[in-house]
Amino acid sequence: MPPADSFTHHPFDPIAPSDRGLRRPDVESPDDLVCFSHLRWGFAYQRPNHLMVRFAKRHRTFFVEEPQHDETVSEPEMSVRRLDCGVRVCVPRVPVGTEPAMFDRIMRQLVDRMWIDHAIQPRVLWFYTPMAMGCAAHLRAPVMVYDCMDELASFRNAPPEIVDRERLLFSRVDLVFTGGHSLYRAKRSKHRAVYPFPSSVDGSHFAQARNALPEPADHARLRRPRLGFYGVIDERMDMALLDAMAAARPEWEIVMVGPFAKIEPDDVPRRPNLHWLGAKEYAELPAYLAGWNVAMMPFALNESTRFISPTKTLEYLAAGKPVVSTPIGDVVRPYGIEGVVRIAHAGQFVSACEAALAEDAGARLALADSWVSRTSWDTTWKRMADLVDGVYLGRGGIRNETGIACSVI
Image 1 (cartoon, rainbow, N blue to C red):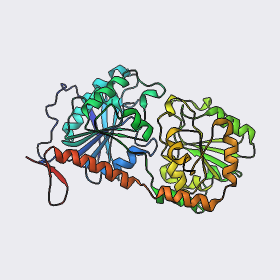
Image 2 (cartoon, rainbow, N blue to C red):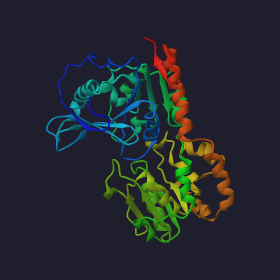
Image 3 (tube, one colour):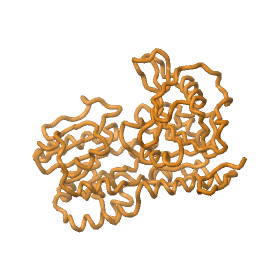
Image 4 (cartoon, one colour):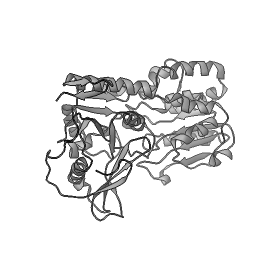
């Protein structure tokens, strides 16, 4: 077995698909967690990152991404890299030109080989994407979880088989978590154990933005007021709204921070006061937030935003910024109803931003603090982990002297 901190490559090896050899004979208790994700670990620091970092403190945690075309490989291989946080990021690399129709077979073979090479014995299999059923349907663990953070079937270019694979995933897992209450209502009839877990917040990280921070170089030159958004920029953005805002208020600097996904840079509106600054590291976000007068969520109202529960809502509030959002269901309720976020349709968005610029900061901060104090990623992870432990213990696990669950032999 390779050293824990090594960067290892698992070359393509056409082993016969079977469950043989996928157990760890030298360990009495299964103690690994394997997560299958549609999001890449380094794309944007989101829900999977927050949760897996915490799980990695008590489990060997493998984060398996979807296949990636790589011109440097001639045969499929799995690269496994252990990060400082303890998470092992597993990237399947396939030669350029490999047909997507081959991905399931290749992925299964690479995953099975990784299972053997790393002597994986999972306590938990954790899924973010139903598409992983194409390569992981034969795998088993004492606890299986589907953390449904988005309605992926409604996203642009969603594979047509995703609905059937989600049905199969529901039949296999013990627990279903949802990324918000709208998604909970959509999924609760599909499984016996569905729990809503709206995204949480690292309050102290974003509270840094309440203080003066050194301005990023691509930000310092901008005038004020500044109205900003950070996050993945894709079909969920209301591009017409952004264009209309920039045209109607040329004195406002509109700042868009984040990577493009499923759209091209040429597809976004261009105005002198509309700035597309690209992807930034999680650690950099407070410095951008600190320089904004209003934080925005200018989402389009379409199928891809019907069930979203934006993580950035609480992050913006922790930063002490006034927040304006289009009427996304999980933002309207509870934040809009409680008056902590201004809700406005596209036609009223500019006037809502004007009101946000003029509002009383003291009253806003007190209200924001009351919301941020109600949750954290630590508490959300703990509640999830308790449910996982409950399933595991109910299947014959016991607690040893350290309080860590272990299996009965």
